[in-house]
Length: 358
Image: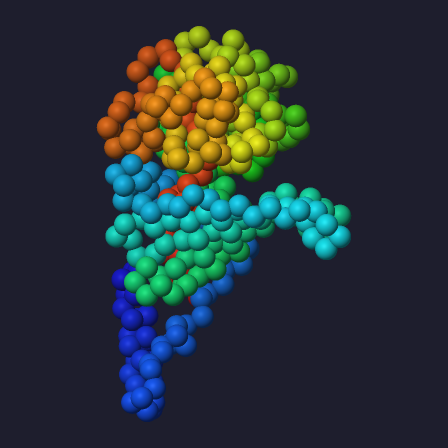
């Protein structure tokens, strides 16, 4: 499917170059920059109507595998802070991207968050686009106005990969601390791995989340009054909060072992998991060079209680079987900050699927 698109694109570029060569004087340098067709624009409604978290799981798992083998070019995220002035802000812009070796596209993502004054304007506080680029010609193929939807899908898919490789079938009770959009995708992704009993806790929205997920997934959900109660009940805990403060304590955790899949930290100001839990855990990063700067690992490193040498593995190493996942009654923390490899994976999926629409 994609190869035929590439052949067509190559023919168009070659044709335009030949025409230009025939009409220009020999002394004029040839420039075929105008030969690229404009990228296709996919609006938010098209994106959300045609993509789901299940579309992303296999490709994100393969991306983690490639990342661990060194077959992904993933630069560190770029951050632009928009300070509040009379003319602009406040807000933040995050730019990520990556290229998975031997794939036909690469992706650059721009995500704007925390533009809180938008609420006064009747607008959401965040927005975002994915730009999917032809890895053969370097020409943009598609611009996806996803407003964090694709980001949340690939985050959910990473949660599924973590659950698949870092838990056992005996871990049946799955807790969700934070019950927003990411939690919904985490629940859907977890359900794609295996059936479970869900438990939910949040400052707001837990009842609605539990009711919605139980109806959608056909699995039982209940709501707890406290995070402590959720932790005591849960074998697996997904945390997806704003990360302004830690959300659990070590003595709350199931003594039979627990897997914590944390996705709330992606900036140096955020931390969901306390340092003593991280230090006591088999700590698994999505990408250590990133989690040590903007993820859960940053806190204990700054406190002097952990170093990067304390990282048990990156998630891709577990996927590849280089190291085992769960081995006993241990605490496992999987730190998901979101990588450019995931963005490249969901970008490829989105292009493959939506480029066929007419």
